[in-house]
Image: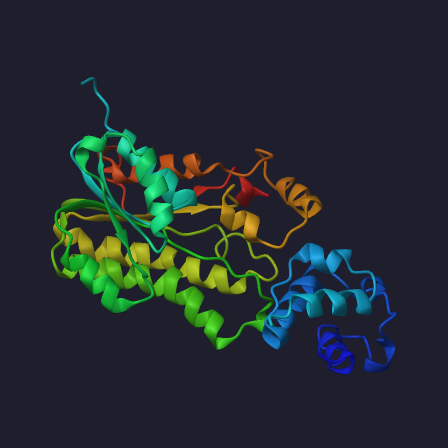
Length: 78
Length: 251
């Protein structure tokens, strides 16, 4: 699992956010457009791309992109 | 026995999704009202737990482990049944994907269980004359897709609102044998299905404010609405959509 790809997958869940705006340090929940629907999109993305079932609280508890990346990576099977 | 038009004494009632949640509450309530129950669920464990809760064990309630998305399994189930007075098409699964994230496999799985399975089961039971004259069919539909449209609930809404329509079609055609068909449309109910949604406690609290009764339903409260529709108390009610929503649709 690569951070570069993860960021690409993550940015697709936003409408107004540019790829360049996302780094591992970005606090992604601070974007204006972030909503509970974004959380559900991220959950679906993690399932589709990584086979990982996140809960909404997993997304809520992640502060930065890196946090979210770490959560997903720690749950990847095998 | 004293006068009670809500009694299900002497009736045999099939309940799908009887292994948990609303289905379990329906099976338990119907047994308390005197029915013998045919429980269907994909979970053997769930069925056994429900079975242990039923009243009148002397009626020899039956349990069938069936994957209702498998049409051959539905066929085998129908073959082994007879003389039903009630059919409760209740089994269902949620889906909380935003529309743009819905995959074909999500559609097939959700519509397969929530919509296709009850349609196939009901039609086949009717065709094979396994439903007695005057039987009552109840579909567990939902407020979603009728009165409430919430984000990331589109697939579930679609699958359940189709049942509201289908219940009316059954009412029209199956009246030839005196069979009634109705649906109950709950809003949020305190079950494991609700708990599987991805909401925070704060979001639940905000949502509850949209309910005039200021709380979600308990499964037993939905079950009682189903009991009514199964019973002779509802003998002239068919094609009806019974909201069990704590007033949610009024807001």
